[in-house]
Length: 329
Image (cartoon, rainbow, N blue to C red; front, side):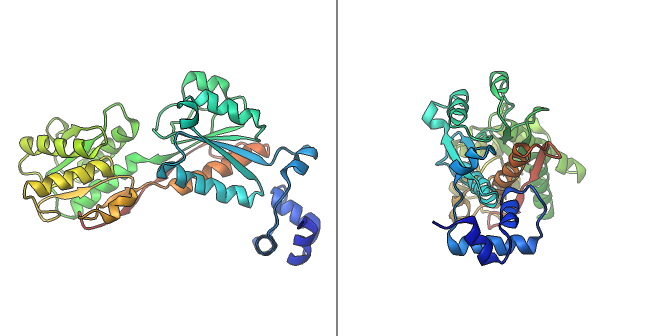
């Protein structure tokens, strides 16, 4: 078995330096950390969480609850969490809402009973933390993709800013009569994307009348197609459409093709989320990429702050989306 002493010898440092680098309890130079990381990778060193627990410093395991860990949204967040967990020499135990019929309280209880040092809750749909869930959070917790509660650190995407970026691109491409296809009005992410889009247009002096230029679907391709039909009846001079997700953008592109509308010459289309298929659609879809891996890594860093007795600063972070421009614009 490879020991911490072996790592210290390979890195040319003391055992205590390796220990401090792994625990994060003392400041270690980046150069020394790099030597230790390289030695760990070369030797295949793995810490023993049971030994850590016996020393009274916790289990060395953090928990993550995601609504569906098979979905790409959650998978990217998990990837970011895992990266930080490795740096902190910790293990990750994750579970999916599908295992508990999407009962978040049962999922949290499952992780607590495994004596994890802290829990990350990754919401699939951005929403406030329910009061019954909030009352159960007696463990160290960080929430992802939810509006922040004062005492629960949170990380969420900047959908408002993403909508503004989409508006800016369409304006730069010469659009003067843009449309918006959103999800259900009750969905926070869709509402923020619309608000940001309207703000960006207003800032540039482009007229925008939601009662004529906005339609709400259900995030499916079929609703993207039907909403485009509705909006083109209202606004036959439309020259662009911003969709609140890539599935509706794909549906709108397909419907435009069936109507003989050329994309992007006659109608420019932007989606959101940068799903994998967006790059490979018959007309590749311009989209706003969510900072999912960064959200995961940031939430893990915040959780380890709490585990180590510090409150994250700031307690609530909003991370910007990234424009990925393709043929649809």
